[in-house]
Image (cartoon, rainbow, N blue to C red):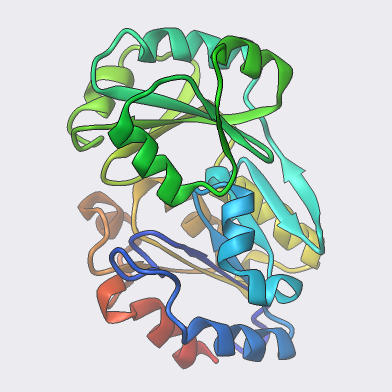
Length: 263
């Protein structure tokens, strides 16, 4: 694939080893990709400030898809943003807050907001968010800020609990499991695939010039928007059935191995 222009990869469960930061091997590969005119693009449900911190040593050489496709950052600017209307956020929050063991976090462009005092939830948030604020009035924060999505942390596995509780109740919004204990709620048109399409347009690249990696159903649209898609061996079973191209697991650094092969 000598005409490759973009390599996009999900992070948690895909590029990142379990409970680990980005593997050190990715940074020399980013240098190689950049030198060859290939834009490496971390694509994650994490917030933009957190991803910038994670890839601080390579910011001038990469693009970033954050908030599960709510926005795309490239060349120092946000080139694509698809927020969830405030009235939709407030509607979903009302449903979420009626359930036990579910904790909403409203993700803005630069900061995330929450209003509970559960210590376990706050510890989880602190590990994943670089800019987060506890507020007394979450409804006011939603009205005064551009909100991309609601990330719902589940004390039980989201695929078994939050999805079963929220998906049937929240209408007109995209409600998707985004990890073992997280579920995201956002406007229906926001996903990693739409953000990737915007990036490819910015790069003047075609779908055929893009490779993508993922492990969960929130990666599906991104994988379908790429010319060549791969899922890790540890991926969600349904995604493996749909995509088919399986590489070694994140624990085995399957994405690193495949990028080396592509280069």
